[in-house]
Image (cartoon, rainbow, N blue to C red; front, side, top):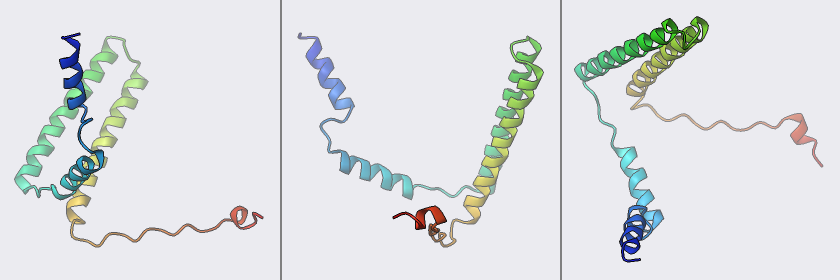
Length: 121
């Protein structure tokens, strides 16, 4: 019992039981929104180079799995295609975020009624 109580206290403190959830969550959300550093062109290029090396390593690994017979060639090609498309999407998202940083946010779209919704009685 003497060993159990300190463990329980550590667990409860670690889980944040003693902190109000609303204030802890609000601080975290606000911190996330305000911390968006602007990367220089050199930093962006360095990140791009690292991501390209990682992608190449992942492709090499998939090819080894195909070579050793763990994956079929079709499955390997599908995985490689998926990796490349995700990398392209990531690059496009990062570029668009940096270009649209100062633009006005888009207005939310209004939901239009369909015939089924309008005919309910």
